[in-house]
Image 1: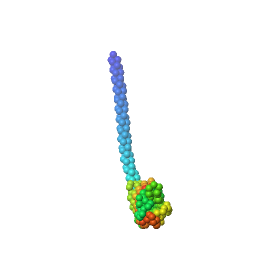
Image 2: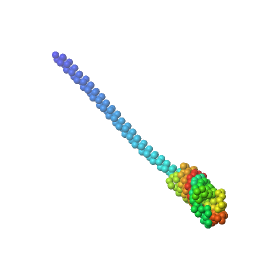
Image 3: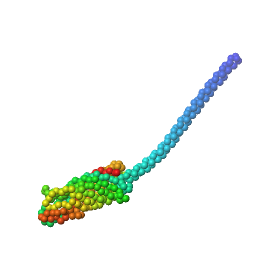
Image 4: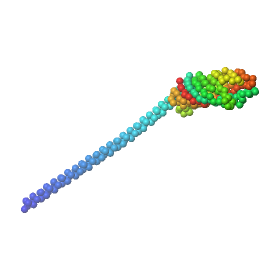
Length: 274
């Protein structure tokens, strides 16, 4: 009996020790799993933090580089604008050339001083006519000048079918001034004397024009540059002619003592920077 109880008690004790070891091992395994999971979470947090830190550093570096690039781009643009202004500026170099090819239309208002006006010249009306030309603007010792050759048809009408016209080549000598309006727009102001050479005149029985017309011309011209080498232009020109005696001879029936010409032109064209 005693041996039986002792054997039974020993089996219970052995079972309890085995069970305790199983629970102990399970507890250790759980602790290990918790520790490994905690380590993984910490590693992920560290990785995320590092990634965020790297992202912040990259963003800062990128913004810094963009600021440097933007400043360099602005400096380069300013330098190119200055060079472009010098290239196309009328008074920017020792001897800069601008070539204008122009075409337009003019309104001629001719005024006659007459005695015994049998042809109605004192009531002459304005007449329109074409105008084409080539102007050259240049810088001579710091003075901006302009000259060229301009063909124009001038004349008058006396009502009905009575019309007279004369064709001239004008050679101006103008003093010029220009200024910029923005990056691509420039305004030219010019004025000075001109010499007109008579090419042809419709024959009439009342008067004959002189071969030379002396006058004053003034222009206001706007230029739009497509690049540093060429652009488009639009301008207005006024001619005050007849400072000399434009009459060479006249008939006795309609004595013309003098002729004065007032001409307005509007024109367009192309500007070349040489």
